[in-house]
Image (cartoon, rainbow, N blue to C red):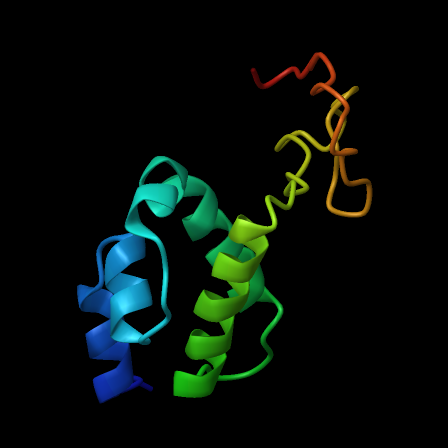
Length: 112
C-alpha cells in the first residue's frame, strides 16, 4: 500500500533551515540569537516532534516549532541519547539529563 504525501508533507519537505521552519509557521524569533544556535533548535524541534503520536498535522508541527524556540530561548540543556552500543559508560540517556552546570562526562564507547 502506497501512502500519498499530503500538501503539508510536501511543504514541510521543502523547509531546509531553522529560519524556514520558524517563518513557515509564523513563529517570531530573533535572527541574531538563532544564527549560532540553529543546530540546537533543530534538535529541540525533532525532540518535540517525537513526543507527538500518530500522523502529524499542522498544529503538531506548529507547536513543535514554537516549543523548540521557547526552549532554545530558555537555554534548556538537551539530554542526548546514549551511544548506539547501549553499553556506554558516562553517556547521559534520555531519562538521565545532564545538569546545567555540569561538564559533559568523558565517554568510553566501543563504537567511538
